[in-house]
Length: 247
Length: 82
Image (cartoon, rainbow over all chains, first blue to last red):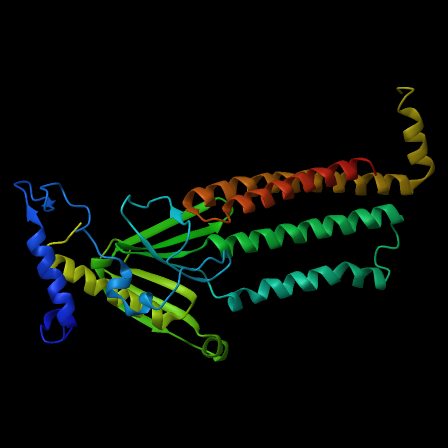
């Protein structure tokens, strides 16, 4: 049985805090929560994630712009973000899953020198050979820029209210799907394969009752931590409903 | 025939390699222009991505996109000057 249904497992301090909140806040005729001065309360909506998630309590804000597991992201906003919505976790695919294009790019750097070695372009004058090489490196640069952008902006976002899947499938095609936390029915974390076990990355499948039935966070780092966080968020949503803190 | 372009045609007819090199140059220029168009689309893509997910690093990525486009324009100019 989840903790919220068991009064014995709730820490005594937390019960005291909730009682204080209940005493300090009254509800007006329209259902708004009021503070002790009779002003509509803004503090009694939702708690900080560190208050209810052990996982996030132990984590510091991630400042690195290239991290793939970004806890409590710094300076992050997304287009469909609600004013009071707080981003808790941003996920990108694990760097190991991107090794294929880095290796391909490195091979690409060596390719024209190989052609030069076997005198492949000897029928062209020297300045044309140089032009071909410049063209090759430009195309290679384009490939690297595209692959990096795709990795950097294809993100999974977990906020205190929703999960969001942002996909950029091709050059100008964008797809944003989201589901409310209280619509989540089931989460599954999967690690499969040798590299996945070593580097701790995998796939989290989230079944929802929303329009999009299934969310797949593929190749993300620490899938078990992600499912733990989602479970914490689901429990907090339940608590919010029970305590009338629904925002 | 126009007296200004006549020597060029004479050169091509005298040396068939000129014809081949002219064709290769044209391929370089057209390829470079198509690439510049792609680089312009990449800038548009970065703009779209930035408005969707804005991070502290997004501005730097925009700079990368613009530099990439300017580089492609420089390469087209280099191809034209071949």
